[in-house]
Figure 1 (cartoon, one colour):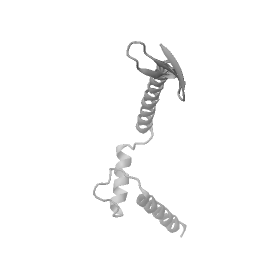
Figure 2 (figure 1 turned 45 degrees about the vertical axis):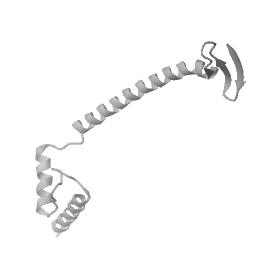
Figure 3 (figure 1 turned 60 degrees about the horizontal axis):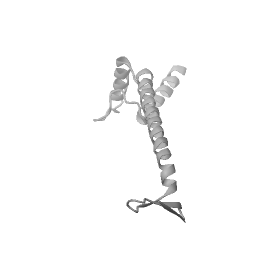
Figure 4 (figure 1 turned 60 degrees about the vertical axis):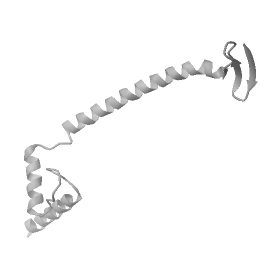
Length: 112
C-alpha cells in the first residue's frame, strides 16, 4: 500500500486493485454516514411532532362548531357574500369588512 499527498489529503492505493482514494474519505465517511442517519431520524421525529401539534391545534382551536358555521354562512348569504366554492364557515377579509360595517351601523343606530 502506497500513500501520497494530494490537495484532498493523503491518497491511499489498494494493493490488490490499485484503486486510489483519499484517506480522509476512509476516516470521515463512516462518521458522516452515522451523523447523516442521526440527523435524518431527528428531522423525521421533529416533522412528526410538528404534524401532530398542528393537528392538535386545529382540532382544539381552529375549527368552528356547527352552530357557528351556520351563523357565518347565514351572515354571508344575507349580505351576498356567499360564492360558489367557498368553504362552509369561511371567514375571509370580505366577511370581516362586512362584520365591521354591520357592527358600526348597529352602534350608530343604537345611539340615536
